[in-house]
Length: 299
Image (cartoon, rainbow, N blue to C red; front, side, top):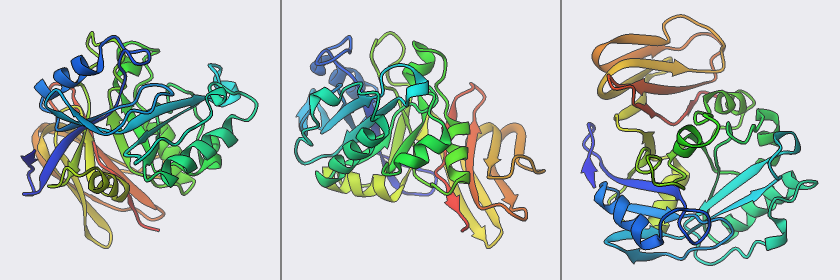
């Protein structure tokens, strides 16, 4: 746990990683040790189609978790990878749904429904890597979060780690959900411990963590700290650790004043323009590491 710039206590979470139980290159015990040594407070072991229960392992809290993939490999068919964390029991998704193509949208929606029925938090993994279009994502509609950054997608698979365009697309269509940064660790050769969710919490109880995730009480990061807040009816502010760039994103494709550049920026303000329905923010530090806020909706 650590205390942030606003005086709030936060826990560091890794919510998407794999082990030798499925296609990861390390055992659960080794993965737990690696993330504990990197300062994470809790992780979810989300092996493909293998529900992992809540427990303590190697000095770190393990949240229950699993990843379910439908749609095969061709983005044209609708590829959806759904991660569930915090379930109180196994959602018991039929194994023959794996990579099912013809009904991938319906299967993805049902998987997310079952995760939530078992008190879990369901989010979309690596939408850029999966070539998910905003229209397709909105059509399945049941997810509670989405990955804005996925380390392994940059480190070892296709170089499509960042999903800002997909997220702005669904937000423009009216779907506002929290934004997560995860590692999706597979190889443990540099894809591990690169991203985290920094959750506002003092309680390590799994149900409390799920409630805080659902409420969006976190920011996501590769290292920097970021806080986005509304200060007046038409103005927002970012407070952050020293940054070289702050960017404000919205449904408008262009407007002035949205990019702030400099050295050791620790605060930036933005005045909304006519027609802006939401704002999210990103910061980049001098080493090129980024952090992402959640979205403030003005509708």
